[in-house]
Every structure is written in C-alpha cells, then in structure tokens.
Image 1 (cartoon, rainbow, N blue to C red):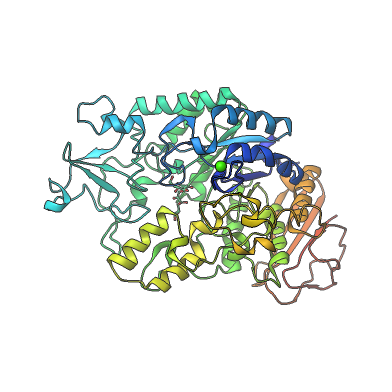
Image 2 (image 1 turned 180 degrees about the vertical axis):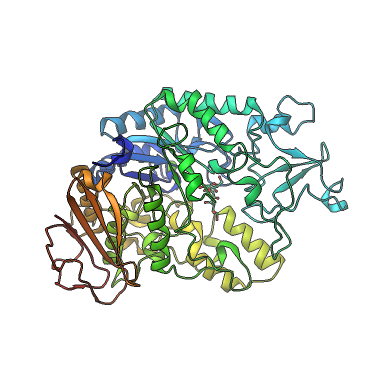
Length: 566
Ligand code: TEU
Ligand code: CA
C-alpha cells in the first residue's frame, strides 16, 4: 500500500486554458468566456477533470491579465460575471472543476489601491506597495538612482521613479505590475477576502502566481551583478523570510475552509523547500510547480545570458532532474507534472521533434513519459493536438511584454545581440510560442475567430487542428484521451511508487511504477533512431498503451513509447 492519502486532485488531470487564445465567440479576435463555455464539451470528451484558467479579471493587459486592476470583475473583452457563473455551472455539470489564477504578488498600476498609494506618503494605501527612497535622490534624468540594482524579469530596473513623492516603487515584473507589500496585514486581509469571495462563488481552487516571491528581504540589498550592470533579485525575493508564515496564514484563513486544490508557482525552489510548501500535513499548499527541468537548457554561452541563451535540452539532464523530484518527494509531498505552460515554448518543439515526420510520434511519446510519472499532470491547451512553436519571422508578430523588453534592451539599447540572433532565441523560448490561438479546424484563423486574431495563428493549423483529430483513433488527441482514461482506471498510475530504470542510457527514458505487487513498465525513446532495449525480455505482461501499431521485441523504434502492466 502506498502511504499517500487518496484525494481527488491527485487523481485529476488539469488542462490549462489561456483565455485570450482559446475561443472567440464574438469575432473581436480575443478569446472569451462564452467561447470557452461553448468548447467545454470538447474538454469533457478529452476527459480532463480540472481547468486552470489563466487570469480573467479586469486588467489593462500589459502582461495579458497577470496585471489585475480589479479582482472582483471580469475583463470586459472576456465577458461578464454572469458569463463566468454560467461557464462555471456548465463545467460543473460536465464534471470539470475550475481553478483560478491568483496573482497577488503584484497588481496592475491601474488597481485602485495603487492609484491611491502613489498619491502621497500619508495615503492610507501607501504601505500596500513597496516604496523606497533612491540611493541618490531626484529623478533619474537628474542623476537620481534607484534603491538598489535589481533588474526586473522583463528587463530594466525593478524600481520605477515617482516624481510626486521622490520615491521609487518595486516591480519585479513590468513597471505596470507594482509588487504588493505582504508585510502589511491589511494587504493580506484583502487577498484572503477576495479568495473567499471566489470560493464562495464556487471555484475549485487556485494556481498561485509567483507565490514563492511574496516575502521580500526587507533590507533590499544590491544583488549579484549581471553583465548588463543590473543585479539579481532572486535570493532576496524567492523563498523569502516570511513566505511560509504568510501561506500558513492564508491556509488557515481561507484554503482549509474549502474542498479545493492549490498549486503554487514556485520559482527557485529546491526539494527541501518544496516539501515545506506542499507538506503532507496540508498546512500550506497541495503542490507546487518547480522549474528545474524546463530551465535545464539555459546556457551562459553567447553574448547575453539568462533565459535567452538556450541549447536544445539534453534528455539525460531533464531526466536526472525529474528523477530527483520523483524520488525526493515520495511520501512527503506531491509533484505537479508539466512540459509546458503559457510561459514556456511548446513541448513537442522543445523536447520532441516538430518536423512533419516525427511530430505525432514524439508528441505521444512525451505525453506518455509525463503522464505515467507520479504527480498531477497539466496539459497546456493545444498540447493534446501536438501544437508546435510559432517560428516567428518578424518582431511585428511578437506581443509579449517580456519579448519586447529584452529586444529593446539587448538589440536596440545595448547592441549586444543582432536582430537575427534575438529572433532565433525567440524561436526557442519566447512565451508567444504557446500563446498563438487554439487550432480548432481548418477554417480561416483555425476556427478561433471570425475576426482578426490578437496574435497570428500558427500557419500549420490546416494540418494540425482539433476537428481532424477528435474522431481519428491514431491522433495525438485520441492518445491523450487514452492516457487520461488509463489514469481514471488504474490507481497504480496515481499512487504507485516511481523507480528509475536505465539511468545510463542517453536515448531511453525508462521507469517502473509499483503498487501492491503490480508493476507498470514505461520505456520512451527520445531519439529519431531505433534503440536496443531489453526492458521487456522477461515477463512483459499486458500492453497498456504505445504509439506504434507494432512493438518490435528487443528495441524501441524512433520516438517509441511503450507501456506494460504485470
Ligand atoms: O510567471 C513568473 C515567472 O517568473 C516566469 O515563469 C516568467 O514568466 C518567465 O520566467 C519569464 O521568462 C508568472 C506568470 O506565469 C507569467 O505569465 C507572468 O508574466 C508573471 O508571473 C508575472 O505575473
Ligand atoms: Ca471575443
């Protein structure tokens, strides 16, 4: 018997909807809630249990809704609260739960709290945000300098000068995303209130944006200098001194009162910290997203660093990282499983092979490799179709505040990267890769909109779309549907222990799952060549799933995934 307590969110498969790009019901080119409601039967057919809905709150959309101006209102382009309630009710009828995105490390600079806060030092909302004097007083154009050297995630200083009070406010992301001051108990009360408001409305949980960043080192020291003259904020912001205290308080005040699931986005978290965030006693969160395996291909080579220097990820490195998390959290905590999300390139392009010859096989192989691991799997909209990266050819196609920021800094201002080099980096890791519209059918604009989409549709929609896949038994969609069905049927897929195999192989990722004397054996060939494989030489057992019609004894064919149960 496994030690894990049985709960619904461990048995669930989560599907991420990025509302702006999912389904447009009124032809304005922007996805919306009525569009999502219409498409719920598609998700029911796929068989997922939970939708993680990226932010739908009122927002100026500087960071596509991760900049909230009103936590209790729906972005007008997305619809109304009534549309939301209707979507929620319909989802519940279909057995689908809705998890909302809690973005509470920061708000929009257009949120009422911030509009008040910036009015003056004695405003009652002043301490809702992080205001500090500059190192040198005065505006930057007169030589004023920010409180420290931190660089924002989206390039440039993490501090913005405000002339009204000759002070600077902190923004770890864009300057339209001022960081809330969690040291202030009134801020925390406001956050708990809005969470309870949504839970009382019937939502089923929270994905918590950068929750590992809410507690800052109050000394605000300079960070380790980077090549571009700015400093790293990481050690003073991630997993800060009071983060667990704040989350425990939130758990006591809100989370523990509802039957909900919670997943914290936890940048820079290690195994020991993760065990605390997602402890089995349930005093904090249910699980976290760690990012090591999607950061494995970062390189410091080349003329600029950080996420923009990238190599193709090497399977053994990715495997070693996930094996570490699988073994490390066993019995102590719970894993979330993902290859991509709205901030990451498409799985099949990054980890698989998106050429016409191998796209379908490698997409199925990646799905297999992930869904049989221990944890709750997350599917990014379109992943179940094997949607690919965009392969941008011009800056005009880019919408993301992060892309525009790094382009401005690295190409325009500093001249350390050429336009072509930057676009090549975008090709690999730009967030817009996974934000292109959902490919529903082969009608113009992939059936996403009858108008002009807010971001270009990937031209491969005529080949890759839902309509051509839902009833095709050999499609990526049908394969994902089967992976999800198997999880419903097999407790071992959820609760079995994970045992790594063939750890010396540079081509095959293999493992076992074990529960109550049963064994699942999984083998995935991550290469485009046939590989010898003796995993099934003895008692193979029953075939659970595979992406080839015929499995050849003694080998795994290119990108083959093969799974047995005995
Ligand atoms: O992302 C937080 C985050 O640190 C990264 O995933 C980040 O987007 C990426 O590293 C940039 O290279 C969350 C949201 O998922 C993201 O969409 C938001 O932009 C960000 O927070 C700010 O709210
Ligand atoms: Ca619309």
